[in-house]
Length: 167
Image (cartoon, rainbow, N blue to C red; front, side):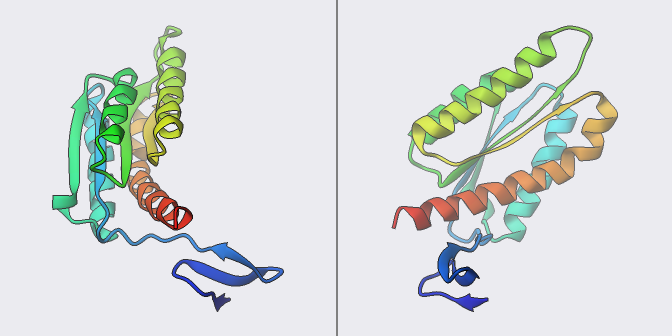
């Protein structure tokens, strides 16, 4: 690949049309994290994976803020308030919904995801959805660190993409 004219641009991937190359550099980015306290052990595992990855990618601890909410259904309102405050370049939603014996799992899973997406679209603030939805505790524990890391990566990539697109 040839480097294009600007930062983040790659040439010659498709018929010499400029293409944005994903940027996973977090230096200078401000990241807000909203975490559900329900299933707290899994949420904290997600948080550990997320913050470790954010730091590894260059986000300073001083440029992160963590707030908590009772559960996944409350996350969209918290994220909306954070997005409207103008203090962050991207947000991360963390939590875990584990299937039980009732329909409640579907309601919480679907509505929290819809709410997170709605906030992202309404505010223009990138939000990485790191809310796990699993069949049981074992699945949640097995996925929590990796999913937290992926959410941190997504937040950085989307913050950089938004900056590029708004130039």
